[in-house]
Length: 360
Image 1 (spheres, one colour):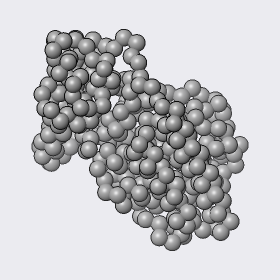
Image 2: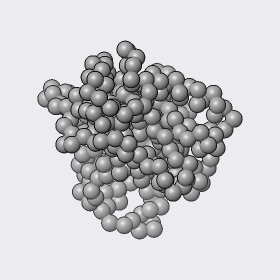
Image 3: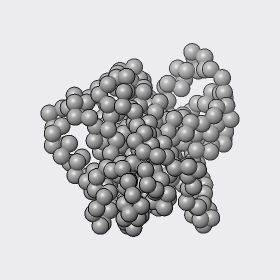
Image 4: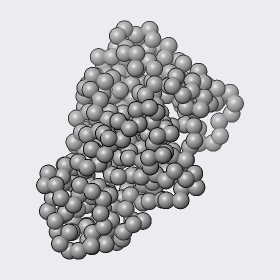
């Protein structure tokens, strides 16, 4: 399903350009189909109209909740086709009878869930995802070692990793995203690459990109930090503040990675683009080329979101990880860094139960 944000009309016009009207029509249709939460942003820079959007199980619904939208397809029509306050047990029962997965509620306009209980995760699912992550990391190790020995990158070595991750993220997106947050000191670069690859493919599916593009984005996620292979672990895993020389070494990794991939045979342009530019910023203050605005491609913008999201939500020995909600809030407040329209789409694509996102 295509995820779009229906935002305040004035705000959307100012950001979406001349095609805003047609885009709003497409967004309204998706909202009516119940395929995305109805996030609405206030045009005020002071965020006068703040809303808390939470995904809950439909079994947790009760009178007094304000429904923004549903997760999944609403096949029977009815109340979920629009935003509404549940005023009676009859309305609650009608909604619970629907064939869908969960419900997005707005806790600023209705009551919240007391002691929300998440659905139990089957042990078999946990084991399957854990195995998929370990298998992907092991194969990525092997592929990178082969590239170092041969002094050349073969894309074929990375395709099995992408295939494994694609299947796993389609079946268990929340589990895979959650379990890749735990990174050991030795495997941090590899697990981060696996996580970014999975996030990129999940994001691509949410945006309904074609299969070939989705696969290339998965490969780009695996290879975006290949330039870090030449950086000493003492610098990569340093807990304290980096010195000026160390910072320059780190900031050179996109160039080194691009040089490695540029000399390889058959590397798609999108993979090269993401490898070199995933640290660029819309305001021109990124690196290495200080690109800005339209010079930064949509796919690079997607990679920046996935890269930073995994970095700030990961468990590391020297820092406490942020929750999904904390990460999205901070990313939305980081002016000039991320594409806000894509960032909202990314936030919606996560669909993590009982996670709360502050809609500014």
